[in-house]
Length: 238
Image (cartoon, rainbow, N blue to C red; front, side, top):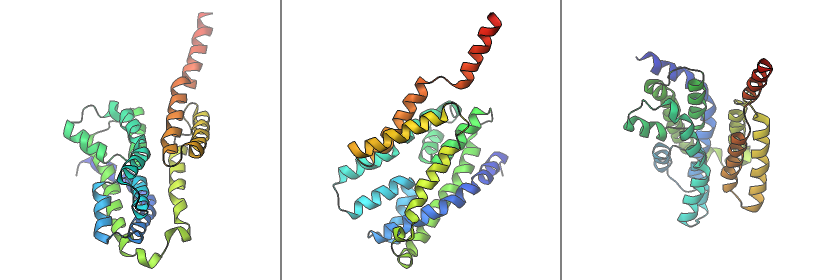
């Protein structure tokens, strides 16, 4: 087996462990909102977007207009436009078909690991990318089916506090970037703008609005390393 593919598989095992509760939660919620086990499993297989699936299934259960569901899912998934733009410099050697498959399999942990790998000078090969994605994809679809199958035994997942798992998971991903320049400022601005947008615009648009505010601030603030380098250069010239 290709060593890069194997490395990707090994690297995504911890992600699989953290994904299991969310996949089971989605399956249980899907069944509680009227889907069959087969429908819930198929949704995970062809959409493969955890947070969006949870948002979508909740909206389906409330019989809201289709356009509202589409816009809501777009709002939640808008961050993937930013993700794809960020990792594109590291996958320029992928063929068009490979890029299409890579973007379909692009998740939050996939983005974080691809960006980290590329920025540290390691090769982002298609084999590694697929190895990392395979574990997450197969695990998500499989556990979704299990969660759907046993969803009725669980009852209301929210009554058990399972609905807090997703925010905790995203918080963990955010703190994975805590050593980056201006991390605290970007996170604080994103959080404050998101809370304000929740009150003014409403959910789920507040997610994308908060993210855009953080991106804008990050673009405006120069990296600390660059500031230090400029200061050192000035001292040398003096």
